[in-house]
Image 1: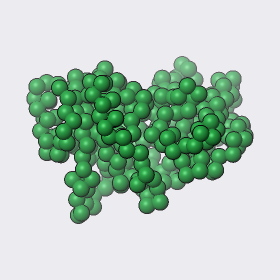
Image 2 (image 1 turned 30 degrees about the vertical axis):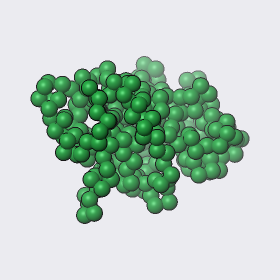
Image 3 (image 1 turned 135 degrees about the horizontal axis):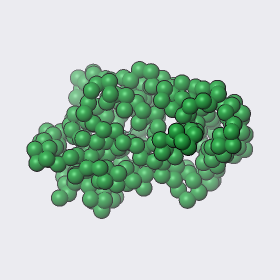
Length: 291
Ligand code: PAF
């Protein structure tokens, strides 16, 4: 069973209800398309944990600021659908922007604290847009589980908080970061990089790996780790370093001394392309299996 036809919101809801009535569990992977191995790894996790899988493809205007890359966001719809078909996905849900957001649309949802830090600080309103669309998609697809990748670690925390705070009966699962052979985290935005930028961009992984090694050798001082990471990244002359921070992995508050599970998160521009990456810094015995 595979649907490529455009389900309206009403049809998608009816399909999910029918599956539930048949006793099937629904796994859900929301995406903005331009799919790569990272997305497909989330689909595989969804398949392992549910009877049937829905993937949405929707480039959500609400999470882009006016100067961001909404208009040039890569679109590879036919290829995406083919890939999802091969992965055994039951429905590719491709809602129309006009159906998702009527001209009178004015309701948003915001996860106030977690959205303030890291990407939220440099992209005001971004997580409000993400939380709003994901909540809408959850209402439509009505999944039992939903999978979010850890490259967007903050996004996963925001969604997990939203689910808890609103009492939604959806289990949020994390997918580990999937990397290219040279370590660059897979992202739909990697295709914006020129050949030269692409080569330089793998320094992000090298710097995060160095940070992890320092942490594993006993370094707990955030400033010293950040100094090393910054030195390595500066060497390849990115256009701009948006942030480079070590934060508590639950609250995302910045920490100066790493005493519990933390995340080192970076956002760097190569020209107009903004890349994000992260590594978890935690004691192996306390690790929750991320990165
Ligand atoms: O991670 C993404 O691709 C998007 O932020 C999401 C979760 C599909 C919401 O638009």
